[in-house]
Image 1 (cartoon, rainbow over the protein chains, first blue to last red):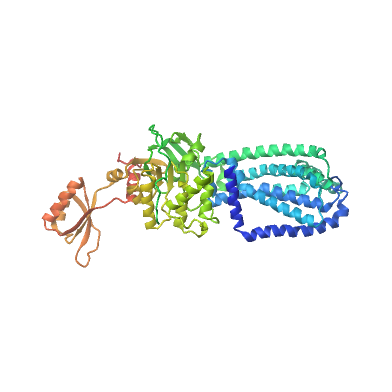
Image 2: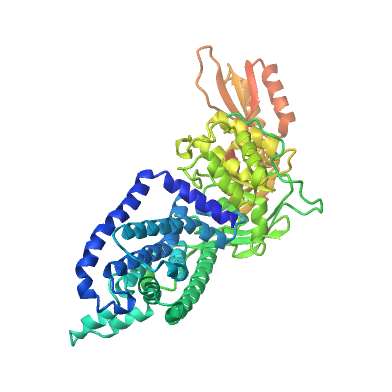
Length: 276
Length: 357
């Protein structure tokens, strides 16, 4: 645990040494709320029927989607990027030559990025609140647990991407595929049901595309979070989605850990742990 | 570089059970040679392997200063990486104080501290202090003990006073010293140094060697394994050296003994009479083989290099014969075998078909 905290501290100190980038990162999020607000309010009348089950406020819908998107993108991308940096600078080899466990090293390498993203997500929520975003704050604890599950699920996929960095030095754009795919089909900016509606207009459109949303963990997590925070639905109303997300979470974490272990074994066998 | 070192650098003395610090038994490692796309498509199953380390067996004693010599690609770094648990052997076993590098890798990492040849491995945007604190925590040092140890190693490598500076502003030598300070944090039982003085200026390198001799390998009984291309380090610092070539261990022994064994007893004679008849007489008798190697200086002196077989006694007889014959001799010095020559001779003599035992 201390090893993980020490690595997170170093990541923070390194990031803090790039003060301008840190400032821009926060400022851009605050500014992003402005167009989100206007788009949300403008499209509200059109989107209301489609998002009826997840709150009737399209601006709130977008805000929750943005927060979840930020967290999932960090969960997928933080580890492969940290490993790439560690390999390029040679720090990874030295860290792996210490008695610290692989798990604490992986958590330590990504912990700061995740916490920083959480802070940025809070900035988004605060800015959105200033623009009139209303949430059922009493549901925040349950919603936070679901967001943590979303992060854990996507961290599993981040481990797969990290394993690819260790094994092949490239991720073959896995993170991009996961992030963009989840954003398109997981309901970040519009409900997945809208895809079915849109496809129904074209008789020759492949209908299986609409089914992709079913295999995207974000679909379930985001729907549950929105129902809790925007609709104020009771926890019992989202148990089905949470259970599905839990299955994804367990499966992806196990898959990520397994593939990471394989990649580390391969890198040790091939002597490529430190090659860059 | 000032190396005001404390005494407490290495771990507590190892167990006295007679266990070697390092034991390599028939250890091998080979790597697949990367092929081009076309070659892979033509024959996907074909593979070419290069043997980085091939059936190496040897032991290093506790507290010993052990040198690894050999040309580039000899397998030194691969051997280091296997000992540091970063690369797994294909065959054979390696252990550190009885702990197997594969099965007990975590235990091994508590005892072994590697120092790489380059300056990578540091966080350049952070201060030296922050770098050391990070690794102290990763090595499970805590609280006041950690602060004390960090301060101690900063003093050891002469970086006290510069610890708050960002590493990116350090010189190469300072960064190398910081890497060594990092390795010393845990009071390692085994220190693996991969060309540690490569980035140091000659004075810093000399001071660093002195520090290793006096404070790390000496009273503190830390076992040091050092890959080096420096004759000063191999011959002046190491108790024993191993010579590797293409992954194979060619020779192990005391550096001076190997030097004697492979040296050809060459002497440099400073004379004013390189054409004196006595030279020809000695050559005719087979006592010497000579060649003039230097230009004649303003005072008429020149250098003659000659091979004298039969050891120091025979060389004394040659010198006596020269002076008795009236040849002007101003110097008669035995030529040290250069490290390059030593390695080359060992490699050549151990090549298939060579006659040297």
